[in-house]
Image (cartoon, rainbow, N blue to C red):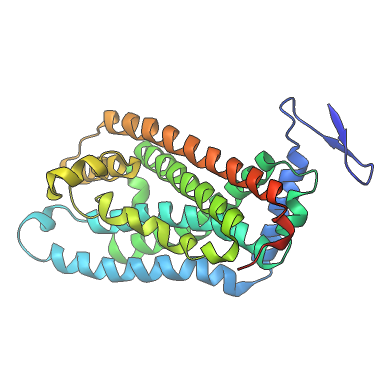
Length: 280
């Protein structure tokens, strides 16, 4: 099927009405923006590296002591790196959206033939690219300097990654919806929202550390099952597929909520005519 854009140039469209060419064009725009700006690339790698070094040295200190941590080498480093997948995935999603707001281009995109589904697909791709840029160098540093190989988790790393990245996209969709509704006044949520989950997802400690009433909240969050699965793998050497199934189920619910919120806020912004007036 072929659609025609405003310039009368043919654009291939899938049966669902999505044009891969429009998604690719938006991804290329942001890829060129990253590639031409070394400060942007440095920022993506800088913070994960700082966290790795700090927690890596703490892990080495604890590993030198007797007891639990002497037998659980890598648990803190693994937790830090998996958490960074979630945080960087959400940040990469929302920062790509914010780049359009900073350049005053968002309104032009959203009133163009670009569909919301295509815009979201481009944000997803850029999120993956940003996570890869940040995670790969840091994972190699972890191997070289701290003897922790994230990839030794094998296929379970894929399950952990997919669940965490799905959570990050659900958060990103909700934050982008808030930005559509409230403009740059809601910008701080792009950096802060994920940190609400940090103590509740039990990144650095088991779920039973929390008070009983708080455990119920923790178990309603998909990342909790990922970090519990990681600890079971690194400490006991056991795999718990039931945790991943629960994470997928919870993620499906939250992703649907995030998607619905984004579409609702997008529709509201169109009805109010505020797409071309995005600001504080």
